Every structure is written in C-alpha cells, then in structure tokens.
Image (cartoon, rainbow, N blue to C red; front, top):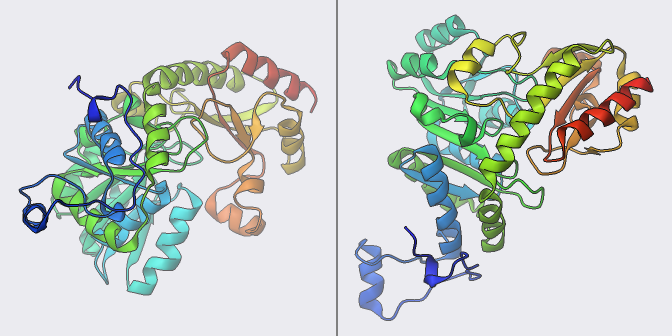
Length: 377
C-alpha cells in the first residue's frame, strides 16, 4: 500500500497511553471486533502496529507482536506456550540469559528441559519419545558459536508430536533466512540488533501463526513488557535500510572470516559461511547469506586475547551486534566473568574466544585494524 498512516510519508509517533471512543456504542463495537481501533497503550499502538506488519511481511507470518526487548519476547513466549509441568528441548549453545531463564525460572513452575547439541537430531528424537515436549526452542545461528539447526528436519519430527518449534533468528535476520518457510511455527528476533541496526533502541519481536501469536499476546498484555511509540519509530526507521546493511555485513564478514582462518595467530574461526564450520551444509541450504557476526579463537590465553581486543582501534568493546558500528567482545569477560573457569568450560566458553560483529564500515578498514592488532600480540 502506498498510503501512509494519517497520509504522512513517515509513520507518525503516536505518543499516547490510552485511546478514546466517541460514545458507548463505538466502544461496544470495538469490544465486538466491529470497530478497528486501540484501547490502552499496553495492548497496542498504531506506530508499533506498522512495524509489526512490516516484520510480518519480511517473515511471511500471519501475525507479529513487538515487545520491549528480545528477552521479553522469548520469556513471554515460553510462559505463554509451555504449560505448568511441561517440557522443552533447547540447545547447548545459546544466549546466556535465555539459558538462565530456562534453567532457573521455568523449573519453579515444574517445567523441565532437555538440552541437546544443535546437530543432535537423535537426541531430539529421544526427548520427543521420552517426554511430552511442548516446545523446541533454539537460535539459528546460535550465540556465540554460530551453530545452525536443521529447521526442516526438526519441524518434521516435532510435527508428529504436536510440539511447537520456535527459532530465534536474530543472527540470521529475515534477509538471510526465513524460518517459518522452513517449517518453524514461530520466529523470535531481538530487534535491538539487525532489525533496528543502529545501537540506539531495545526491542523484541515474535511472529508466526495467528493463533500462537495471539496466545503470546494474551500473556504479554498481562506481563506488560510493552514497547513505546518512540522506540517503535526508531525500529521502523532502522528497518528501512535492513537489506542494504545486512548485504554489506554479509560481504564483509565472509571475507574477514576467510582471512582470519588463514592467519597464523588465529587457531579457529566459527562462521557458517566457511566450509570448516560444522553446520556449513545446513547453513548453505537454509541461508542466502551468513550474517555479520564472526567468532574466532586467538592463539593464546585470556590475557593475550584481551591484548588483541585492546589493540583494536576501529570496533567498540561492547555487547550486542548487528548495528552500523563494529563491536568486539571477549565472551569470557563480558558475559561469563562471574562464572569461573569450570562453569565456563561447562558452557563451552573458551578464554581465547572473540566475537566480532561487523558494522557498515569499509571491509578493508576493518581488516587493516585487525591486522595491526594481531601484529601487537
């Protein structure tokens, strides 16, 4: 549609906490679904709805729900769709806070979990046979090792037991992979990352079938993790350049990943676009591009790796990813410093691991900076 909201070329920021009705008859018509409007800010906003509709179009979804963060979308989804005493299956490599919620909060509601390697299809089969599994949940690619799960195969197995499949596609984006078309029931995004793309807003999104999103929306309306209108506008503005940004980041990342793999001071590179990646064949089938994040291991210990990061001048040392600025981090320090060596080893977090998120800077500038930093260690 060419027509914009209120005939404005750019979507207006509807900054209101509540909505009015002309009379009781109009209110009743709204309650009965005969009058399209909004009631209260926690239940929806016109600016946010425009963003939801665009994400629906990108993902090929029936419905979409924005929230205040990616974690809000994930936790609300789990609370809405996994019953008390239910069981979920998830993967070993994942965002720490997601793991924390699954392993420390959900058990308080009697919800148990089976954790499998992203490639362990037989492990998934056993879990489905031995438990009444409500939901399978995985990132693809995962954080930080960029593992890719076989979405069509997982969807096929889960369909036989009426198990919902939810994929966190934050690292892929709908530009590179559309999990719903591959068989997933739901897709989650930390829209803070690539969708918004400018490191200036927190947002989350969940999309998929209308009935599942509606179930999540009902829980969302109770919990109240609503995104405000201005954040919605920033997300919408960022999405206008999503395709351009991701295409550039894809090109930069695969070139840099290849150069890092050939560098004598790098012991291993984790990037699904490289043939050396354990899930490369899956990534090639499911993704049109491999994303802008590269994880790699420096030949050295924690402190030698930290020295490399400190010597880099172009990227910022910070968590997050997918924005226009390149970011670099050492997961041991930024995400797992409080865990201790034994716990980090249990999670597979190596002290020499680096995660690099390519921004939109010139690829040769990024590489030149990496080279000079590697020369200093």
